[in-house]
Amino acid sequence: MGVQVLNLKEVAMTQKLPLFFCVLALASIPAFGENIPFSGRGGAGTVLGMPFIYDADGGVFLGDWSIGGVGAGGTPWTGSVTASDFVITFSLPFGSDIDPTLVSIGSAAGCQGGTFGGTTFCTTSGVPWTPDLTNNTLAFFAPAGNDLSPGQDFFVNIFFDGIDPYGSSFSGSFSTVPEPASMILLGTGLLGLACVRRRKVRP
Image (cartoon, rainbow, N blue to C red; front, side):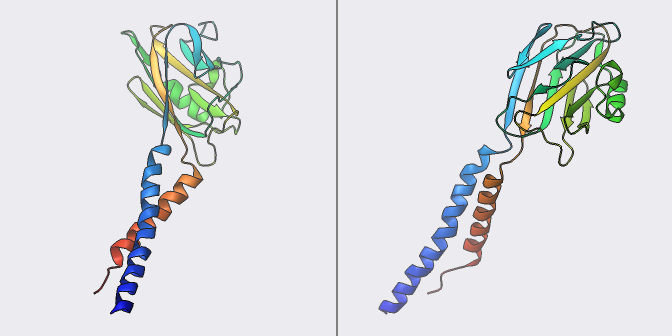
Protein backbone atom coordinates (compact mmCIF):
# COMPACT_ATOMS: atom_id res chain seq x y z
CA MET A 1 0.00 0.00 0.00
CA GLY A 2 2.85 2.36 0.88
CA VAL A 3 4.54 1.75 -2.47
CA GLN A 4 1.35 2.63 -4.33
CA VAL A 5 1.04 5.95 -2.48
CA LEU A 6 4.67 6.78 -3.29
CA ASN A 7 4.11 6.08 -6.98
CA LEU A 8 1.06 8.31 -7.06
CA LYS A 9 3.09 11.13 -5.52
CA GLU A 10 5.84 10.68 -8.09
CA VAL A 11 3.30 10.80 -10.92
CA ALA A 12 1.74 13.91 -9.47
CA MET A 13 5.13 15.64 -9.25
CA THR A 14 5.91 14.61 -12.83
CA GLN A 15 2.72 16.32 -13.94
CA LYS A 16 3.35 19.47 -11.93
CA LEU A 17 6.69 20.18 -13.60
CA PRO A 18 5.34 20.68 -17.15
CA LEU A 19 2.45 22.66 -15.71
CA PHE A 20 5.00 24.93 -14.01
CA PHE A 21 6.79 25.52 -17.32
CA CYS A 22 3.44 26.25 -18.97
CA VAL A 23 2.63 28.92 -16.39
CA LEU A 24 6.03 30.53 -16.94
CA ALA A 25 5.52 30.56 -20.69
CA LEU A 26 2.05 32.04 -20.49
CA ALA A 27 3.38 34.75 -18.18
CA SER A 28 5.95 35.66 -20.85
CA ILE A 29 3.38 36.26 -23.61
CA PRO A 30 3.10 40.05 -23.06
CA ALA A 31 6.87 40.30 -23.58
CA PHE A 32 6.59 39.78 -27.32
CA GLY A 33 4.34 41.05 -30.07
CA GLU A 34 4.86 44.44 -28.40
CA ASN A 35 3.92 47.73 -30.06
CA ILE A 36 6.06 50.82 -29.45
CA PRO A 37 3.72 53.79 -29.99
CA PHE A 38 4.56 57.29 -31.15
CA SER A 39 2.71 60.46 -32.13
CA GLY A 40 3.46 64.00 -33.23
CA ARG A 41 2.42 67.11 -35.09
CA GLY A 42 3.95 70.22 -36.61
CA GLY A 43 6.37 70.70 -39.45
CA ALA A 44 9.28 68.95 -37.76
CA GLY A 45 10.27 67.25 -34.53
CA THR A 46 11.17 63.83 -33.23
CA VAL A 47 9.40 60.51 -32.76
CA LEU A 48 11.04 58.11 -30.32
CA GLY A 49 14.15 60.29 -30.54
CA MET A 50 14.29 60.15 -34.35
CA PRO A 51 13.77 63.25 -36.52
CA PHE A 52 10.63 63.59 -38.63
CA ILE A 53 9.88 66.39 -41.06
CA TYR A 54 7.20 67.51 -43.50
CA ASP A 55 8.16 68.69 -46.99
CA ALA A 56 11.84 67.90 -46.59
CA ASP A 57 12.33 68.42 -50.33
CA GLY A 58 11.05 71.98 -50.03
CA GLY A 59 7.54 71.13 -51.20
CA VAL A 60 8.62 71.66 -54.81
CA PHE A 61 7.10 68.43 -56.09
CA LEU A 62 4.66 66.90 -53.59
CA GLY A 63 3.67 67.25 -49.96
CA ASP A 64 5.54 64.64 -47.95
CA TRP A 65 6.37 63.32 -44.48
CA SER A 66 9.49 61.43 -43.57
CA ILE A 67 11.70 60.11 -40.83
CA GLY A 68 15.19 61.20 -41.70
CA GLY A 69 14.14 63.58 -44.48
CA VAL A 70 13.37 62.88 -48.13
CA GLY A 71 16.68 62.42 -49.92
CA ALA A 72 18.62 62.97 -46.69
CA GLY A 73 19.69 59.36 -46.09
CA GLY A 74 18.87 57.17 -43.14
CA THR A 75 18.57 57.68 -39.41
CA PRO A 76 19.41 55.08 -36.71
CA TRP A 77 16.53 53.08 -35.18
CA THR A 78 16.50 54.08 -31.53
CA GLY A 79 14.58 51.07 -30.27
CA SER A 80 16.27 48.50 -28.06
CA VAL A 81 14.57 45.59 -29.84
CA THR A 82 14.23 44.49 -33.46
CA ALA A 83 11.18 45.82 -35.32
CA SER A 84 9.29 44.06 -38.10
CA ASP A 85 6.25 46.30 -38.70
CA PHE A 86 5.60 50.03 -38.93
CA VAL A 87 2.16 51.67 -39.06
CA ILE A 88 1.17 55.35 -39.14
CA THR A 89 -2.17 57.15 -39.33
CA PHE A 90 -2.46 60.80 -40.37
CA SER A 91 -5.19 63.28 -39.47
CA LEU A 92 -5.29 64.92 -42.87
CA PRO A 93 -7.30 67.97 -43.94
CA PHE A 94 -10.13 67.56 -46.41
CA GLY A 95 -8.71 67.23 -49.90
CA SER A 96 -5.47 65.59 -48.81
CA ASP A 97 -4.67 61.87 -48.99
CA ILE A 98 -1.73 59.49 -49.01
CA ASP A 99 -0.99 59.11 -52.70
CA PRO A 100 -1.53 55.44 -53.70
CA THR A 101 0.42 55.94 -56.94
CA LEU A 102 3.53 56.91 -55.01
CA VAL A 103 3.05 53.86 -52.77
CA SER A 104 3.22 51.63 -55.85
CA ILE A 105 6.26 53.52 -57.15
CA GLY A 106 8.04 53.09 -53.81
CA SER A 107 7.49 49.33 -53.82
CA ALA A 108 9.23 49.05 -57.19
CA ALA A 109 11.97 51.66 -56.71
CA GLY A 110 14.36 49.46 -54.74
CA CYS A 111 14.94 51.90 -51.88
CA GLN A 112 15.99 54.67 -54.23
CA GLY A 113 14.83 57.35 -51.81
CA GLY A 114 14.22 60.96 -52.74
CA THR A 115 11.13 62.40 -54.37
CA PHE A 116 11.21 59.97 -57.30
CA GLY A 117 11.74 56.98 -55.01
CA GLY A 118 8.12 57.09 -53.95
CA THR A 119 6.50 56.20 -50.64
CA THR A 120 8.70 53.59 -49.04
CA PHE A 121 10.20 52.16 -45.85
CA CYS A 122 13.76 50.91 -46.23
CA THR A 123 16.60 49.65 -44.06
CA THR A 124 20.24 49.28 -45.02
CA SER A 125 19.36 45.89 -46.54
CA GLY A 126 18.08 47.79 -49.59
CA VAL A 127 14.84 45.81 -49.71
CA PRO A 128 11.63 47.91 -49.37
CA TRP A 129 9.17 46.82 -46.72
CA THR A 130 5.77 45.72 -48.03
CA PRO A 131 3.16 48.54 -47.84
CA ASP A 132 -0.54 48.29 -47.02
CA LEU A 133 -2.59 51.47 -47.49
CA THR A 134 -6.08 51.83 -45.99
CA ASN A 135 -7.53 55.36 -46.18
CA ASN A 136 -5.01 57.51 -44.31
CA THR A 137 -3.36 54.62 -42.48
CA LEU A 138 -0.21 53.19 -43.98
CA ALA A 139 1.48 50.02 -42.72
CA PHE A 140 4.81 48.53 -43.77
CA PHE A 141 5.83 44.93 -43.10
CA ALA A 142 9.40 43.65 -43.21
CA PRO A 143 10.12 40.90 -45.76
CA ALA A 144 11.81 37.83 -44.27
CA GLY A 145 15.37 38.62 -43.19
CA ASN A 146 14.93 42.39 -43.50
CA ASP A 147 13.87 43.39 -39.98
CA LEU A 148 15.07 46.64 -38.40
CA SER A 149 17.72 46.05 -35.74
CA PRO A 150 18.67 48.48 -32.93
CA GLY A 151 21.04 51.15 -34.25
CA GLN A 152 20.46 50.19 -37.89
CA ASP A 153 19.86 53.05 -40.33
CA PHE A 154 16.50 53.31 -42.08
CA PHE A 155 14.22 55.86 -43.68
CA VAL A 156 10.52 56.19 -44.39
CA ASN A 157 9.14 58.59 -47.00
CA ILE A 158 5.40 59.17 -47.45
CA PHE A 159 3.93 61.36 -50.19
CA PHE A 160 0.49 62.97 -50.37
CA ASP A 161 -1.73 64.19 -53.17
CA GLY A 162 -4.17 67.08 -53.13
CA ILE A 163 -3.72 69.73 -50.44
CA ASP A 164 -0.32 69.71 -48.76
CA PRO A 165 -1.01 68.49 -45.17
CA TYR A 166 2.04 70.25 -43.76
CA GLY A 167 2.09 69.99 -39.94
CA SER A 168 -0.85 67.54 -39.64
CA SER A 169 -0.94 65.34 -36.56
CA PHE A 170 -0.14 61.63 -36.77
CA SER A 171 0.20 58.56 -34.58
CA GLY A 172 1.53 55.09 -35.08
CA SER A 173 3.75 52.33 -33.77
CA PHE A 174 6.66 50.04 -34.43
CA SER A 175 5.97 46.33 -33.80
CA THR A 176 8.79 44.29 -32.32
CA VAL A 177 10.01 40.84 -33.31
CA PRO A 178 9.34 38.06 -30.74
CA GLU A 179 12.43 37.30 -28.67
CA PRO A 180 13.85 33.79 -29.28
CA ALA A 181 14.05 33.08 -25.54
CA SER A 182 10.40 33.94 -25.07
CA MET A 183 9.40 31.75 -28.00
CA ILE A 184 11.36 28.81 -26.58
CA LEU A 185 9.76 29.31 -23.18
CA LEU A 186 6.30 29.43 -24.71
CA GLY A 187 6.96 26.27 -26.68
CA THR A 188 8.17 24.49 -23.57
CA GLY A 189 5.08 25.56 -21.68
CA LEU A 190 2.69 24.46 -24.40
CA LEU A 191 4.47 21.10 -24.60
CA GLY A 192 4.14 20.72 -20.86
CA LEU A 193 0.46 21.56 -20.99
CA ALA A 194 -0.05 18.91 -23.65
CA CYS A 195 1.70 16.32 -21.47
CA VAL A 196 -0.45 17.21 -18.47
CA ARG A 197 -3.61 16.76 -20.48
CA ARG A 198 -2.51 13.41 -21.91
CA ARG A 199 -1.18 11.81 -18.75
CA LYS A 200 -3.72 10.90 -16.11
CA VAL A 201 -3.20 9.48 -12.64
CA ARG A 202 -4.66 6.02 -12.32
CA PRO A 203 -5.64 4.59 -8.92
